[in-house]
Image (spheres, one colour):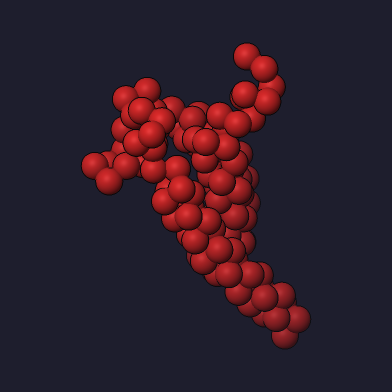
Length: 120
């Protein structure tokens, strides 16, 4: 398989978009955990385990995004869907929209964290 074909297949299956969405959500979760875990007096190891779970979840999510596709009938194996029935465009737009909303929330949490630590 040529590298160009592989990269085109990654794009067709929305793997790039899922990777970006995962990174944004992971950052959002880590920011939220850094705010909320000290509030509940959680030990330091909880944050470390949380970050490790997020790191090890990344390749799993990429593999799942490669193997499955979201359709109006639900999640299906990519091999069960012909390329002309693919929901690539609609699914890609949903992923981008969710990523933008979550990035805005993450930016708000970051601003909250910066201003909160500046007040102390």
